[in-house]
Image 1 (cartoon, rainbow over the protein chains, first blue to last red):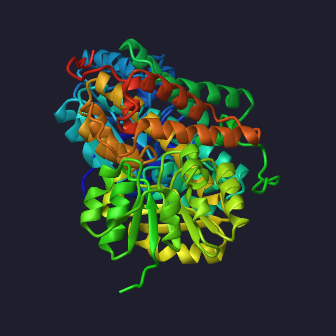
Image 2: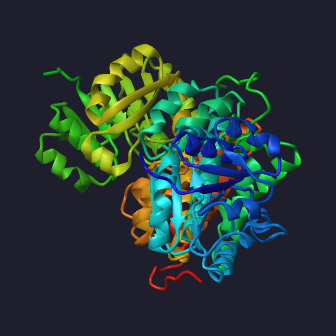
Length: 300
Length: 300
């Protein structure tokens, strides 16, 4: 059995909770902080310690893992009053599994670097299903030594660890991922809308087209559920929208225009306004499909 | 060995030529008509007969296969002066591998039906690579009996025959395919532009993301070549644009708006204006990537 270091965990959302659970099950000595203490209870019953502040948490561990929603949350738990930064000892390591802007990542890492604390950005893909199964993909940025130190813990959570460069590179790769998801899911949504509208037997259409140039993970895994107007998480639409914002800002900073991603972001904004932000990102289909498939038109 | 019927073939473009070649090699007794007679020469050397008009061709065969560019071409070879319709005998079958609008397909089929001639629409996917390899996917529409009659010949050309309904259903499924290709390829193009602009090691990024929700045939098969600004056929951009037009018209007729497909169509229009219409549809990357990857910005 691997002797895992004393590890802290902050963030017990729909991704963080199953990830922390998997660490505990693998024998990682885990200390938690969570704003909503009740979220931590099942983990406490499995042996996790709970602390009263990020600072107290940081004082108790060698390695701190974060999985929160956005850069302001990362900033608050690290650098707020009683933030973890004030408790982390020199030589400790922060692994940030949140998805935030690369430049925010680099700024946080630099502030901690001044205190002798290393940083690895480790945003994940795979959604809640892969988080529960321990089969996430982790997109890594950081110094090779720091990444090597992070690997044993991340290997508990993931089936695929990919290291792309220095601090921020993991976040950059995540931005690329979200651009792919945007256009890919939107294509599936429009194709399902069209095929359904024409009255085609869509299960057979999906099977036939999936093996060719039209094939995608989204078609194979979300096409049928879109047709049923079912959008199980997965990954929240409003978080995908947030991530697309990061990608669009990175593009703009380099003089690149990404018109498809911009359009998907606008469609997602509208859906969030309509109250669908907490559905799976495949609810993008709501933007192009009529509400129900009950009124299929047959072939004219 | 299967005893194939006397078969006519019209259309020796970048898809039709390898398809007709595969039929000849499989022992199909093939008679050809082609506007550009010289395109038929290699096939004549392999035993194909050449006729002087579609009508003469039709008089010589039980089964007529078409693989031309668009509905006006289908109309011309069938119903023009010396068109095939005037030579086809009752009981014969037309298999149309062209991609045309479903309503045009149904109109052509109905006109021939009045002369006792059956119709199967059989548009293909897989591009020139699959056409040469005999591994196309054929999307079929037609009466079950007519489709059954078409299968042995189509099985020579394809690894996958999928039948979706009556005449027109194959064309409808092809429209769905082209909507998927549109958004999917556009997503890959934008993702490659962004990742390259950020200076990421894109080969590793593609490998890491391909297995997750961002994965697609386009990412796996066209991402790397887009990064090299290389757009080998495949499938011509201007033909994809034509097919998208069919899909958008089908959507509009049903009150569906497909904003991503509309945007891709507009990007393709601009590329065609700029002279890129005969490149592979992956040249869609030209719309969002700077001309050369030579000036990679490193991570800021």
